[in-house]
Image (cartoon, rainbow, N blue to C red):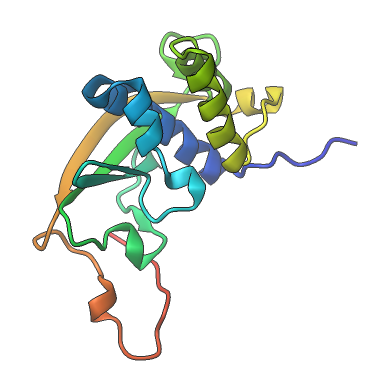
Length: 174
């Protein structure tokens, strides 16, 4: 009897989006060591990446989805300006060019790491409940686009200061 995968499909697509962003944006901008250090979302932090005086919240969505789920008020609530990064993925087909699976994007990223970085990244994956499993190859995606939005007072969002007395937790879609 096979056990269920540790990650749901929404967690799989979320981790694919975070690793895509880590690899294609953070490493390019900050280098591998600083990018890995900034990758704190797997530590159950409110933001996916925090570095210097900014932060990034990464959301991966299926192509055609018009709303992004913000699972907690804290994700877009901060005193500093940050970025909401939306990674749009479509259903992929195994064996085609550009096809991404959770296993493949992790293997590709690991090729660029030294031993210390590899240990750090493996620990982050463990915290995200990822254990390599061939069944993750059943979830295939194609990268469509990355949209970025500055999160400041002009973007629609709910902040902790807006919550009525007695409400301590909320999620919403934008």
